[in-house]
Length: 152
Length: 264
Image (tube, rainbow over all chains, first blue to last red; front, side):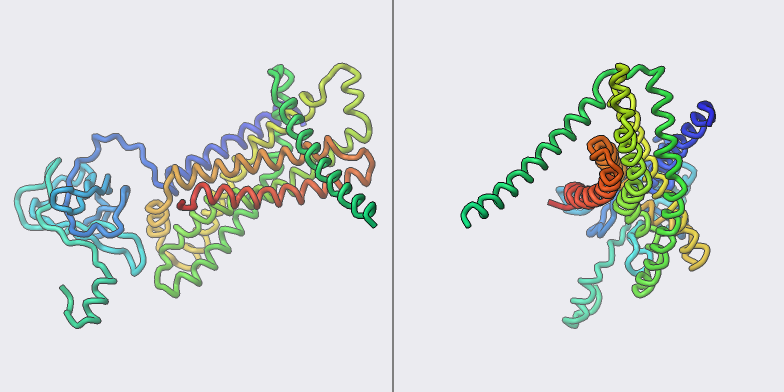
């Protein structure tokens, strides 16, 4: 085979490998190279952050509107502080909305669902959710049920 | 009686020394093949030729295997996960299995069988027909002219093949999981993206495939170079290549997995 043909085929092979890596990075592991200006930051305090982690989903009515940046412990209140990046296009979330931790399916991953309030003012960069609802702890629910205390 | 025992112990000792000497020769061989700046105008075309033969020609078997392994993973995973009502986690299962384990390991085993055995046989035959010695006679170093391009080609091809294997497998899993079994496409990719971390899973998989590529190519080329130059010797060397490569890959995989994903 002519050397040039071989070179072209090998070049295509290496490009295919590079494309595969890019696909794994972007589509499979969900790396994004979005500039930071695209989003604004909102935080929420939860008594129990459950299994939330960075890059988790933040959605409203089932539509993804942002993602979690970090989950840290507030050392004064001993609550979990969840910082999330909301897409700048979603700029009219009522200020009294509540953030609820939900689970997709029975064993799926946990995500934050924003349940809209009725305030005329909207959440802006750096605001905090006034009302939150922590992750359902199935173990605690079962033990409460078993000891006859009912749900709390 | 005592002397018979001594003979037996001496035989064990000789075998140990032989093994050790062989390992030493293999290390020395690798070192001498890879050091020394190759002349790019000669080395470049040789390398491309070898990448074509080792990498590109292995693509067909790698793509077909990746496709079928992805599809089987989707079928098996679906059957198990529906018991828990969480078949939407199928994308996560397929992606993690392929990226962390099956991609690098199965590609390395295929690579050893498809490319490694051919390398050993080719170099063994070169040695048996004294092409290597005539090269030396002409003042051409066979290590740098014949071995180095093959080694580098293997090192480069193997990670690329493993990446392509994983991508094709994930696509095959989507064919069965989403198109056939009816898992929602959004949750296939969404669960995958939520659980696969680039640095942990993709990069560790690439590191694994690099290590396997070095091991398989080194074994294959060295077995050819070190074989007994007869037809029986070449056949034994080819068998050893496949056996040693497979065992090395599986052993190294356990060690690497323990280091990368074991939590200790």
